[in-house]
Image (cartoon, rainbow, N blue to C red; front, side, top):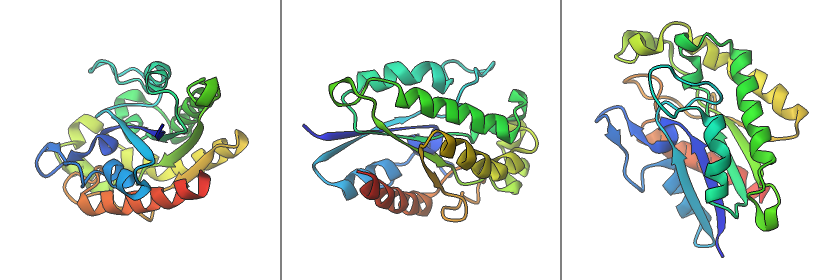
Amino acid sequence: MKRRIVCFGDSNTWGFDAATMGRFPEGVRWTSLLAEGLGDDFQVVEEGLSGRTSVVDDPLFEGLNGLTYLHPCLMSHAPLELVVIMLGTNDTKERFNLTSFNIAQGIARLALKAKSTPAGLNGAPPKVLVMAPPPIGKEYLDTEVGKSMGKNCDRKSAELPNHLKELLQLQETEFLDLSGHVPMNTIDYMHLNQEGHQLLAKIVLQKIKNML
């Protein structure tokens, strides 16, 4: 049986390409590059959904609350060895009225839920890795996404990693901060470009090899 990893995230896990408004193909998405790097003994399950939040319901779109979907998602892919969570970008939207600390609290809550789900081997919980996404560039506000996202998203996403690191240390959850290592694109400043996917895959691959 292959060792299964679920990557649970938003549009940057789904592979949104801001240049085409479509999806990057396999071989470009960081999840498929991760699978290539891990080899045939592993299966990487892509559970990315554009617009997904950690714990809040979006009043404009259906089914984006990660907390309500996480349990059935993980159980449907059981048995799992590892869950990789990368969320927080969408939680910065002005309409949710969350502080950066609130966003970190939501992601930490999601991590605890993953760690208590009996989706691992023989009903044990899987290992969990939480990643702070690359921060949103301040220029996002002047792009097409600015109207929908609202103000201060860049500030919240820049503050998120420090809060997240503190909360995850308390629950002894593995953490990876991508800020300063993986840039967002220069189209909407909140999605990865092809180079970003390549960089992310390399960083995650090394981290997972150290964990498993």
